[in-house]
Length: 308
Image 1 (cartoon, helix red, strand yellow):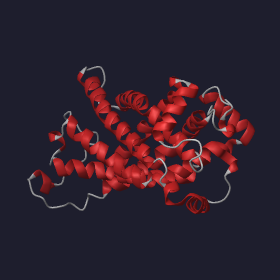
Image 2 (cartoon, one colour; image 1 turned 180 degrees about the vertical axis):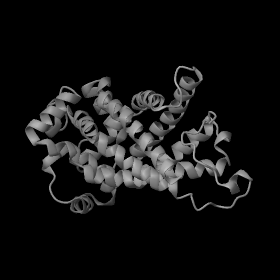
Image 3 (spheres, helix red, strand yellow; image 1 turned 60 degrees about the vertical axis):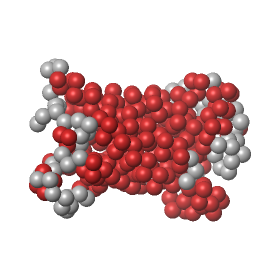
Image 4 (cartoon, helix red, strand yellow; image 1 turned 180 degrees about the horizontal axis):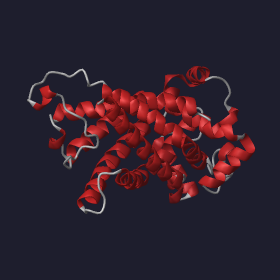
């Protein structure tokens, strides 16, 4: 297979290759495969994501509940959570997280593929700009729709066993106490983060993979995918971590007593804790994005092969 700029090199129906505009009944497959691959990747990396959330919410000078610095780093956080709250606490919030990936991941990959086919007929005709535009649009749309699941996931991760009851009961509690705005708290930041992550990761992944293969040292193998995923994960983490910290704190607060808005949260965090506070949880964030992408890509490609 030749080098193509697209991230997912799906087969194009005969009607498309011939220039026709007839829709194929296979268009639903990226939605299903993307959702299944996203849920699989989420389950495999969730404890790292939980440690990242705990690191990001600690040290808030204006909130007595999270003022204390309890965790020195990712490994210390994971060990202390296991010791004090039990092993199950590492999966606090896994239910809304899986629901989020079932919705966010499904819509993101499905719309990404659909947008690409609307702009160009063949994968080999895709350009860097095409992938960036499609990635940003799909990230914004999918993250906005799935925002309520993100709010509950972050609160369950940050507060651990303090949150009791079923997932649906907690959704209802948030709605009753904070209204619709509570379920879509931080949606603008969520959309911005998704746009940044997708807009950065996709082209970086493609460029890294292309250069590794063209160098002649590595073929189109799992090792190439592994290295490319970690590089794109690093780029995505560097670009999105400040937005992720603000988003996590905004979603975790009840009401609006501490932070009056996203800019206020950013400025308060910077002034009271220093610029590097915006990169709290960076290491687990990067370590999660790398394996997450690897698991996702391998699962997605295997599902496509099974269907062939």
